[in-house]
Amino acid sequence: MKKILFFLMLAVCACSTPRTVTKGNSIASRMSTRLTKTDRQWNAHLGQINFIDEARGTVGSDIYHALIPDADAYIRSVAREVMQTLYFSPDDSIPQCDILDYILRDDPGISAKGGGGGHINIFYSTRHVERSFRGSDTVRVDFETRGVLLHELTHAFQLEPQGIGRYGRSRVVWELIEGMADAVRVAAGGFHGEADRPKGGSYHDGYRYIGYFLNWVRETKDPDFIRKMNRSCLDVVPWSWDMAVQYALGKGYTVDGLWHEYQVAVGDI
Image (cartoon, rainbow, N blue to C red):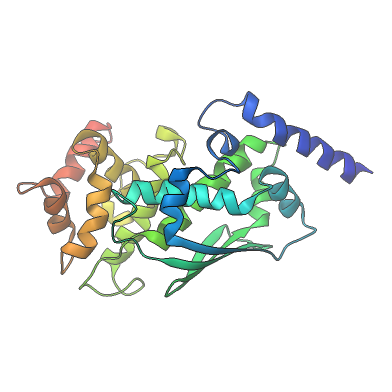
């Protein structure tokens, strides 16, 4: 009986959240179960979605389904956001994802993307969903689920640096791949602004260090900077930070110079 009451309460919270939370905090305030014309145009690059729940019966699975009743439309809406952040147009050279297996799993981690060759898999941890729900905070689950998906779907659609090795064997490739995924998450409002920005460090630290840095350049130098940095993976061979920055902004810029300017601007030095 307690479990039934718990999930009745959860369903009410999930239904009321879009009307009560501030704009930008709610999945439901951004996503629709009805795909727009723009969603469909960008989703030409995303084929079949197989939603697989390997954790049915867990609290995290029940929370996920209560918040996101139509996972297919939700994933496609987030995919459109990702591609719009990375590319100028649906006609750009966007990697095709023919099949996406999206898996809810009872796992101690958070999420990860795997696969390749047009068949991608992403798992999302129901334990992480449950952790995010502590305190009956549907807004936090809602926000975190979208943010994690922004990051992982970026890995499905981003371009990869050429001529410098592969992910797992090249530090520079790792820096850009993970940094770009968090840059998309930052640009799409998937982090909590300054509160989530790591202080100090280096762009060599990847993830949010690069994600916030690239967005600062986007906001202060060129609104298309992230798109151009992504495109540089096709046109700058062999790829390097300095050559990519110059490809995006022009001669005279270096990544070290921009990083120093960024650190001064945000008050870290």
